[in-house]
Length: 128
Length: 206
Image 1 (cartoon, chains in turn purple, brown):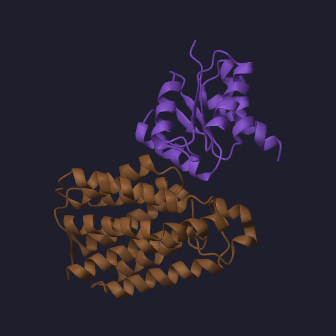
Image 2 (spheres, chains in turn blue, red; image 1 turned 30 degrees about the vertical axis):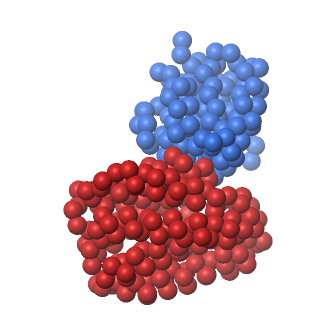
Image 3 (cartoon, one colour; image 1 turned 180 degrees about the horizontal axis):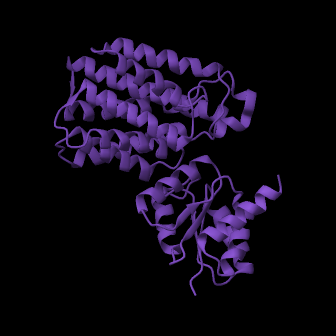
């Protein structure tokens, strides 16, 4: 059964890859893609890279996109608009590492996109 | 006043020159209150824009802006990529299929660009961002039947300088809180270069 995919957008390729490693310790059946750094491998984010990562991680259950800093969010939102896939959510205001971790666990349980995102949001609203 | 395809291309060329000429100023401002990549990123973006514009014969201003938008979006890694990309994409959409761009068309296009910028960056006037330059320039163009290009440049300059005393509420500079006061916003400076470039090109064409 398809699981909700996860995309990790970071200004740093190594940060994105590092988080992917952490997630893969706990889940093996969730598609996880990274879009770290610019198209020339520098610090920053790349809108084409993010589009590609979303397409690769996309399943019939959709994709949840996590990001680190402001311009990553802007590029992620632009990628989502350009792709016009119905099931993509950018996890706005959610911490990248912890958010993606909770999402990976919830996605692995087979929940749909809305449910996964709801549980991620609940995790962080309880902490405040 | 009409903006032609040639004006649009000359505008981008002038912006490309200015960004390269002032790359270090943009970068040092951004080092003070941001992540230090604004000059390099914009220079790279507009270098790519020049390469793109050189290879295509354009029929409309809208098509020029669309290629500018897509190039900047794809090639600029910092916040200026999605922001300038969105601004040009909105202008391109507002001017779609128009063979000749009148002052009224242009006023609509820059107003749409400003809306797009505010949505994309979630910034309001007074947040110490490029919006603080776009906002008064858009109003100036809307409110004047005939554009006085020197007046437009002066409007952009005053607005850009006024960002110095603001505290940043958006972008990387917002993490610095009150320490962001005392520096001009780098996005406001690059937006000032953008409008000065337009004014120079239009004035030369008159």
